[in-house]
Amino acid sequence: MNMTRRAMLVRTAALAGASALGFPMVGRAANASYTYGGSAWLGHYSAYIAMKTGLFAKQGLDIKWQSFATSSDRMSAVMAGNIDLAGTGVVSSLALMAAGARQFQVIATPNNFGRAEGVLVRDDVKSVADLKGKKIGVTYASSAHVLLLDVLRQAGLDPDRDVSIINLPATNLLSAYQGKQIDAAVAWTPAFDRIKAVPGTHVLLDDTAFSLYKQYAITPGPDVLLTHAKLGRENPVAVKQFLHAVFEANAMLTRQPDEAASVLLELTGLSKDEQLAVIKQTQWYSAADQKGLMVEPGNFVTGMQQLAEMLVSLKQIDKAPQVKDWVQASYLPAATR
Image 1 (cartoon, one colour):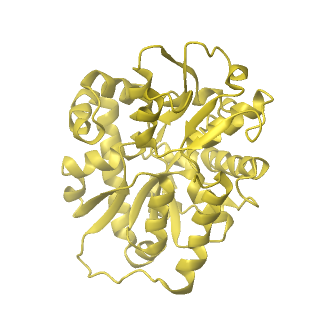
Image 2 (cartoon, rainbow, N blue to C red; image 1 turned 180 degrees about the horizontal axis):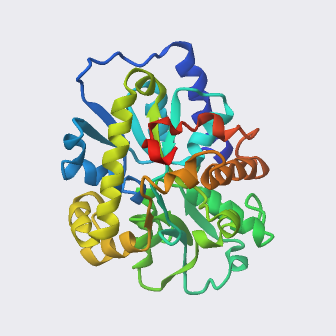
Image 3 (cartoon, helix red, strand yellow; image 1 turned 90 degrees about the horizontal axis):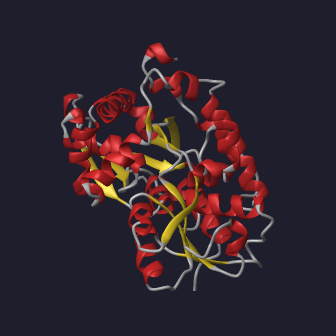
């Protein structure tokens, strides 16, 4: 039986209490390696490139990679102290903020994407209204889930009565769609690209249809980079070095997309042309960009606050946290602060 979408976020938020009550992060030796939690989603491209091309090593960091199927699973690992650094869609972290979790800090946003995630449908569906009565596959507590709830609301459809929303891991969406277990899928790259390639399928809408994108250029689950608060306290230099390497990787994604694509193929499984398309349709933020985004009153931080308010209205979280209280800009280069 699928967990309800509210229960999924509640389960994520409950980790805040569990971690605070008795699961401290294991101490590390001064020169120990650090673990980064990632996936094949584009929000992790920068860290993956930095690891594979030696940019982390150049900063004196030994970064190990651990993959997770969902942001909720990744945040569970952060809360338990099993990973030190992570990239994530912000929805799951907002649920933990709403529960008062203080085990992590938001340290940067790596990119802006708008066309690498969306609602994929068969040719008989021409509008959101046509989704009425359909079975829609999506990963609960994800950016795609928030996008779906928002566009259904914009179209006047009730997600609990007018459609059947099926909770599926992103890796299972393609097979469910091909097997006609679902009529539509809401996905992000690389699943987005693979489903889009199924004959008779088209993109009904993407993240640019999201309410807050129109006003703040913020997607339903913008990517953020996190550090475990313990690492930030005990070795802030390591966090600064991590960000330095990430921004170097972003420069490669911007200026040398062909070279970057070659590095990423093993991670994503996309073709070279598909990989290049994803890279080129995404804005890769520099260290200098972070000042206007993350430093109070950064536009991105303002957008995240608005997203938190929206999650309350969509009944995904009980209250909106003060997002700026979790943002730590001190790890950014001095010129951006």
